[in-house]
Image 1 (cartoon, helix red, strand yellow):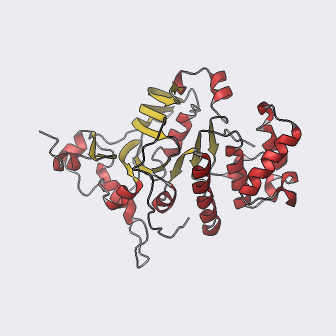
Image 2 (image 1 turned 30 degrees about the vertical axis):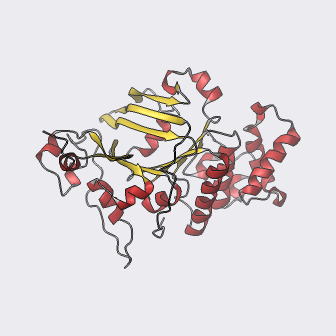
Image 3 (image 1 turned 45 degrees about the horizontal axis):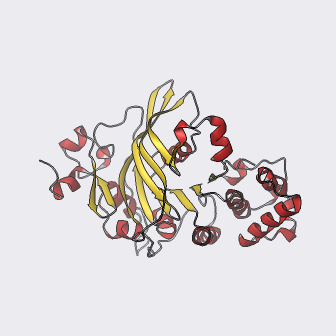
Length: 347
């Protein structure tokens, strides 16, 4: 089991902890740039990404497929495939230490699957079909120094919290004998067993039905509150993001378009792309509007703002010059020339 670690109705955005003062800045990503060298040319996957995550905070990373969300998650774990993939520049500070400067052995020993874990999108593709659930979960605790009995107690307690009673013979079963919802909860258990500080949840409910999805979202909220674990929640679904996150960062074609506390994001959406994403949610009549067009090829990404070919508000400057991130109000950042003009921050 590799533990390197839908359709959804519109939810009312809950009040979050955006106004609270977190004690520790757990993760800081600065000017992260990632390229992939292919036979067709260089893919400019991430373009100077900046974000931060505090202790006990859930940051939802939102965007269409191809926006770079999963690439960013893999970069944080420093598992971009080489030599095709390359972290061109940037810094990833985790608990004050730059992950990109760590030796591979140090990263494996202290970070991957330890202080940072991953809940993958496809549980069946990540589980080892040759070993039982119990064997695979125990493997995660072998370096902990716990005795066999202590490991079993820890595993069964956590599975019980995830509504997966071990007395049903679960630990003796193989991955294919579980439903998608059961196996995904096993994945969540695996991500929590090492007592991580950060969980990267990569579209963990995409393949699940709405009922199971709702259960897992409730579970994640409870675990974040109880364990003070931080979560980078990767999703294409703003309805899901509204349910689980304290803050939302919108990624498009490898660039950050907007970042804001969740309640402020839904009240004062600023970037044209963010507004388009909101229009994709069903309205009161069940109608859904399409954004139109598609995410551009990142081998030849558009000049300026990468969203301008699909933006109805684009003008000449948008096509020529990449906009800077500006802060509209406390904690609400946007990368848009129109917003810069409205704030009176351009000549």
